[in-house]
Image (tube, rainbow over all chains, first blue to last red; front, side, top):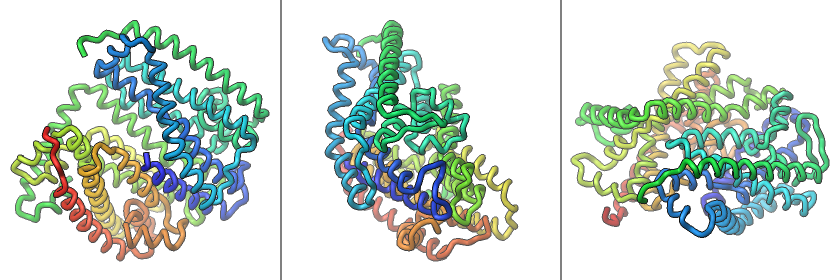
Length: 244
Length: 273
């Protein structure tokens, strides 16, 4: 985990140089100033430590090796096990990764990492935490049907990160793609919490107030939960395990 | 393909080394062909994953912004060269990294110790990664597309580029040795890849966007700029400052990492496999 404390800031330094160079000839890019752009990347970096998830990998691993069978026999559900594990991991990450990197950004890079509203930001990050978990968990569930899914999983993760705004602000995309992205659930994973953090939301020319967009995020979490329920029902029916 | 082996083995066993390497590739492919569909899908996916790298650059230019002094295709060419260098290294010798980590963790590293070849060579030969051929494909595509959109370089530039591109593979080999060496003592830590990626990022962009101190570091201390920027700048006819120093440093880097690997190797403790 300590590796993150090195890797995150190094990636960030490269971004600082790139954006400084890009902004040297102009004031704004797609409406964002240099300070906003760097704040965006800074927030992406620290929020990621709080919401990072590997439940897809774990579930697929358990299904492929047959270890999943032992979970079927336990008195708690796999879902409960997985989410408790994630909470534990992220609590560890909170002080091993989040706090050191946060301090580094705040004091060394002088990025203004103070949320516009502490209440709405923490609510939004918590919802994002759940949403990342649920989407990844659903990807994990595909392991019931597909045996070797490593490649598919990786492709999905990249697609998710691009569509969620974890790699770049969504406003950089051409207008019609922004419209598509607006209706996809991915923006609620990273883009929405970041904008809530910054205190204003805008995508594809649509502005919403912070409570509205967080409410929408909550609705997506509920939808994702229902999708998980359905997939889980279908998947566990299909699962057969011998021995293990 | 056998760039690595040449370094490890003086001249004498060169042909033998190449033959061994080809054998390694052949058996790795045979294994992978057991699930042919998955293999081709994986390569395709790897190609798509790689394509997202230059996406940011593309979007920045499409929004009317730019890296000062570089046209979009010039910037993309640098990233194309970077991908090409990785596309050759990752399948053909960089697999030594995960191979070492996996073997040390599982205990199968011991098996290589009793083979009648050097351990380093065995680690490279058995680490062929066919999936990473997708990276090579992605590199070729990006490189060709960017090249088609800039004035075509003359023969001399091509020769200089080829020489420097070879040096970029030497640097990749050096990084492979360092990460693999770390894998021997730092059990089961695949995150060494992340460390590499984060540092290698500096080689993907024109050096003039970085501060003076960073430029000095990536050309004359750890030759990261060699991974993409320096060879590409030759092809663009705008040679990077300090190219010669970077070449010398790259060679030193290779030998230093070889020493590092050997030192780590001596520290290897078997847990009994």
